[in-house]
Amino acid sequence: NPNELALEAELEFPLLEGQSVTGVALDINGEMRPAVPVPKAKGQQVFEDVTRARIDPALLEVTQGQNYKLRIYPLPAHGTRRVVLDITESVHASAAPLWRLPLRFAGTVKALDINVYVAGLSARELGARLGARRLALRDEAGGARLTLSQGGYRPNEELQVSLPRAAAKTALALQSFGGQTYFYAEVAAPLASAPRPPPRRVALLWDASGSGAGRDHGRELALLDAYFQSLGALEVVLVAVRDVAQAPETFTVANGQWAALRQRLETLPYDGATNLSALKAPADAQLALLFSDGIGTYGDAPLPASNIPLFALTALAGSDSAALRRTAETSGGQLLDLLATAPADAVKALETEHTRLLALHATGARDLESSSAYPEGGRLALSGVLTDPEAELVLALATPGGQPKKITLRVAGAPAESGSGVAAHRWASMRLARLEADAERNQSAIARLGTEMRMLTRQTSLIVLDSVADYARYGIEPPASLRAEWQTLLAKTKEADAQAKARHLERIAAQFQARVKWWAQDFPKDSPQLAKQSSSSSVLADRHPSRKAYRLQELRRQAAKQGVKIDLQPMFFPVNAAPSSYAILSAI
Image (cartoon, rainbow, N blue to C red; front, top):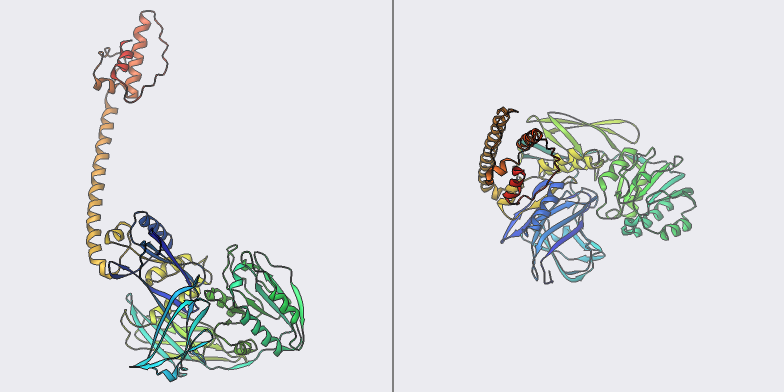
C-alpha cells in the first residue's frame, strides 16, 4: 500500500477447470494463520463487522464460475500483508499432460517471481513456457526446478509445464477424512471411437455479451477454420446472444470458404448481460457449437438442455466449466478447453464419437462420482466413499458401435491419513462440480458439502480472524492451533450467558408476582377520600392509570354533592416536572 492511509485490499483472480483453492493463510503477528470455512452470507457480515472495529480479517469467496475474490483488511499505510493460497489440481493423463497456472491480473505486475519444483522427474522429461516464450529447467536433487524473475509483467498469458504421459493403467488412492474412507481411481478404459456423420447444418451459439470480449477469439476462429476445412459444404446458423438472442443468421460454407461468417464474427460488438437460457440451438440443426464462458448475469435460468449433440468450447480462464460440461455431455457432446487443446485435436473430437460412461454401480461403496462421461487420456476418473473394507465397482460403457461393455474394479487397501492424500479432495471436487451445474436448486447441498469438507464453494467462504475472542463472538470454529483456547473461552462464555439468562428469568418472575399482587388488591368504590399528597413518592403513585381513574371519579362525586360540575381536560406534564404541578390537581 503506497498511500498515507490504511486501506482494504482486494485480489480477484481466475482458475482453470479442475483447479480449486484448498487453503488460505494470512500473516498475523508473524504467524501464517489458516482460514476456516463459514457460510457465505455470514462471512460477509462478520468481515464487515470486524473491519468497522479495525480488526484484521481476510475473506476469500467464489464470485462466478472459476473466479475468486480475496479481501484483506487492513493493508497498512506504506506497508504490506502476506497471504498464501493453496491451489490443488489433478492433471489429466492426456497425450500431452500440462500443468497450467493462469497469470491474468487486473493490471501490470511490478515484479513477477516464479519458482516451480517438479519432484521425481528430470529436466529433459519436462518442457515449460510462458505464453510463446520457452523457459529453461535445470536438474536438482530429486527433481527439476524452474525459476523466472521479470519486472513490468503484463498479465495476459499463462505458465505451462508439460509432463510425460502417465502409464495407461489403473491408479488408486484411499484417504481417511472426517471418520470416512474415500477412494479415488483412474480406470484404464478402451478408447474405441468411430467417425461422427458430418453435419450439414451446424448451429453456432455465440455469447456476445460484455464478458465475451475477454475470450481468446484467435483460438476460437482457428478451431472454426480447421473444422470447416474438414467438412466441405454445409450451412451455419449463427445465433448471437446477449440479454436476448438475436435473429438467426444463415451462412453457406463450401470447401472451407467462410469469409462472410468470419467477418461477421470479427465485427460483432460485445456488450450487455448474458442470458444463458437464450443459448438454444435451432430445432433443424444437426450439431451445435457453443462459445461462451457459461456465466449468466441476466436471469436465473441455467443453460437449456439440447436435443442435438452440443459441444461447449471455452477460451477463457474462470469459465463455469461444471455447467458447460453437464450440458454438453448430457446431449452427447463434450466440453473442449481451447486454451489447452490444439485446433487439430479439437476438430478430431468434433468429428469422432467416443466410448462413454453410462452408469456406475458399486458393492461396498456409496456416493459415487465421475469427473466426466468420457475417458481422458484413456482413463476414467472415479471417486466415492467406502462402506466396507473392500468394494467392487462396475462401469457400464457405451461404445460408438452401440455394443455395451462392462469394466470391474476392486477397491481395497490402507488409506492415507487425513492430512495427506488426494482422495477426499477429489471426491469433494467431483461432487461439487455436479451440484454447481445447477447451483440454484442445490444451494443447501453445496453449503453442507463446503462446511463438512472445509472447502470453498458458492455457498461457503474461507475466513481468517484476528483473535480467539472474534471466533468465539461469531460462533466460528478456529484453526487447530487456536481450538483449545477457543473451547475454554466458549465454555466461559456459555456459563456467563447461562447466569445472565437465569438472572433475567428471576427478574421477570419477580415482576410478574408483583403484577399479580397488585391485581389481587381491592379498591372499593366508596372508600374514604385519600389524603392530599404532596411528597414526590405520592405524586409518582398517582401516575398509575388505575389510581388516577379512581381519584378523578372521587373528585367528580364530591363536587356533584356541592352542585359543582367539573369539566376535566387532558393535561400533559414533562417527566421532570415539579411535584407541585401534580399537587395543584389534587388540591382542586
